[in-house]
Amino acid sequence: MIRQLTIEDIDAYWALRLRAIREHPESFGAAYEEEKDLPMETVRARFPASDDLFALGAFEEKELVGMVGLSRERRQKLRHKAMIWGMYVRSDYQGRGIGRQLITAMQQKASELEGLEKLILYVVVGNDSAQRLYRSTGFQTFGTERHALKLGDAYYDEELMVYYL
Image: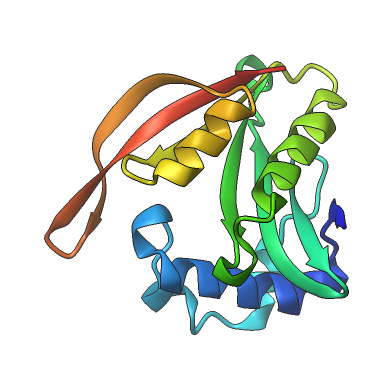
């Protein structure tokens, strides 16, 4: 089941978010070391729960196994676009189409937002399965940011992708 996360899901959301950035530090701008000790009041204050900032979750039974977020630009001249962020499906649930369900559900929900015209995301170059998923759901590459992330002495490039609603 795919549905929008609510504040009641905060514990499951935060546990999954920490798992994602711990297991795949090269795929997220957030660092586990910076996030793991945040007080829950801070997490609660940052929880994505508005019309312009929200997350969808994939549930197996009652367990959160995947998620993806959307952050819409706030400024008048930029409100026609939104960023997809935090896409993650637990490794023990990958290969079941959950990622595709999350992305297509987000595309559908985004298409219902008045004035929103495009979705943008960044994906680490070399994450072939994610790149294939995004392309297969209609995202197109519009650039590459070299050295977008730095983890220790290693740099990671990111492919910039867009989906027109």
